[in-house]
Length: 400
Image (cartoon, rainbow, N blue to C red; front, side):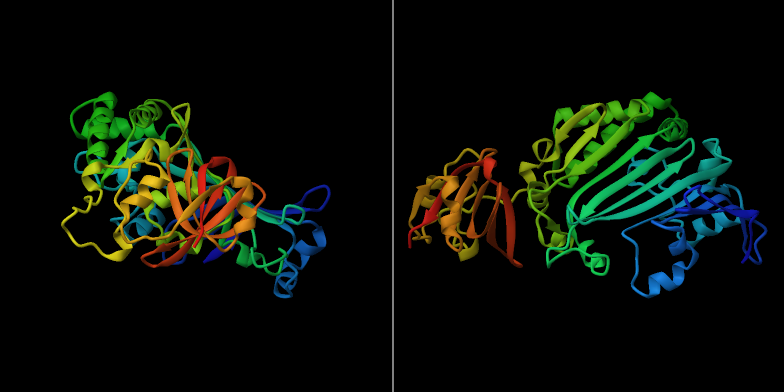
């Protein structure tokens, strides 16, 4: 690949370096990639002068940033076509695009041209910062797609195994403290909806109606039941150049590697994701639930059940005492205590009900300021579930 550029510049304080007006020309392809500026940001100019040596020596800075500004590709050029042809079934795919859009299942170069995009132009900014006081590795990424939309991500990660340093910061990425992902539409939705409307012989509004029917059918088949408020907020988002934001702020740091071991409803409980869409903010676990038809049937009295599944399914309003009585095999005796007494019972079996009606029974592992962790048996082993103290409505501890 042939690479050319016009020059190199630095900021007035020497903490950033920019390589300007870069052009990348792949060999054997009559096309090129334009980049207005490639920028590096670091605590000092000396680090940037010898960045390769500094990084190899384990001297990664406490903060660092990289930006690609004015990245430009021709939609009808060989490079975009080559990217598309490498995996045509997944190119620029988003499942919601294919719902109600006639025979179009992916958005490729031809569809982008039909939507009026002659070039793909974007700016990408990535930064990380080690916060020693908060003991947090903060990472952010912004991808601005001109006349399409912007995607933003920011998250905080911690190292639960000890003090967080630059050297062990890679381990921290596995444990999430908080995260926000946001998409702001800047014209792409309307162009896509107009294109899809023409594909099925209707207008933009007609496509939105068809799309809503299709996506609700897909959710029903998957056993997912959204609330009317959530459905209304999504329609409002589609009808305007809106924004979708998802915020995750678990009560205690969450190990991402264990995500696949949880059931979907447990993930919603642990992470309590907050969704902002169509100008409305809502808790997903309060507006998204499994369809009754998709839930396991209640065990019948005359049917033998396995020991691990001998507790009857209960409604959220059922008390802990009723749940315990429903399990004929469980002879454990409990007594009720105040949440403030939990610190005296670490290692004991506890049974609790949250204010939202969720029931948890397991071994009390830790008590922190404002939260506890209960270790619960699961089919794949055991998992620690965090619970905020302010969310506990009733708690009992085993007496034997």
